Amino acid sequence: MIVYKTEAEIARMRDSARITGTILAELGGLIQPGLRTAELDAHAERRCREFGAKPAFKGYRGFPGSICVSINEEVIHGFPSSRKLRDGDLVSLDFGVLYGGYYGDAARTYPVGTVGPDALRLVRVAEESFENGLLRFVEGNHLSDISHAVQTVVESAGFSVIRSFVGHGIGQDLHEDPQLPNFGFPGRGPRIRKGLVLAIEPMIAAGRWEVDILSDGWTAVTRDRSLAAHFEETVALTDRGVEVLSRIQMTAGAPAGKELPHA
Image 1 (spheres, rainbow, N blue to C red):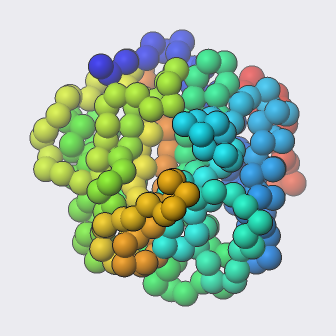
Image 2 (cartoon, rainbow, N blue to C red; image 1 turned 135 degrees about the horizontal axis):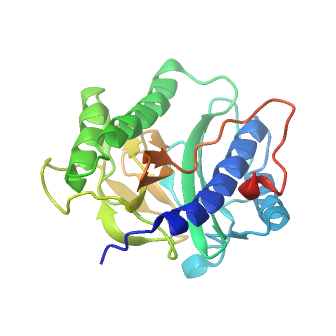
Image 3 (cartoon, rainbow, N blue to C red; image 1 turned 30 degrees about the vertical axis):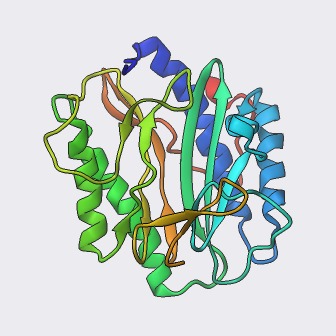
């Protein structure tokens, strides 16, 4: 069952999503060759405490970290560890928080050091496919209109949409109805209406779409070991129209304070 949010609930979700986006942007600023992924995890957990929030992923069905760190052919759900980032890597960070009873969720893929043009293009197309899907997040459209719009951008660029994992509703639970694939025919599924809050998250690969799960039971990798990229935002359809709740513009020299949600 889809849970449509009131404006008051969306206001509370705006707080959790802004914390999510702020910490994720800070993590992106730390990315460099030689950094251990566990250091990113420690930063995220410390900042959650400073905001009075809880990491959404830590302990979720046994997941050990506050963030998912997925490198190169790893699509999603990679564990933070002592592994060091290397020049030329792509690293996807998926992060969420629980604050005030509501969840925020977002993901980015970052280049590490000097990255080749094909890898950078993959990252760019992941974001472009999200933006194209967002254009279809309009009252009266069908959910699959978003899915089809994402798929169109990805496949037109010669890449593949990962089909084993999907976007989702979000609110008082991290994963709510509806499920939102990143592929499919338009004009299908429930109609979009005000109060719908989604985590739209294209996951794409430079090669084929099939994935394998590693022996840790979590980390998903492309079966052909091609590069992967992930982009996600928490978005809402409000009285003011579409709002990307987790999108943050960071200002150089002005780090976010713990009072951010009330700004």
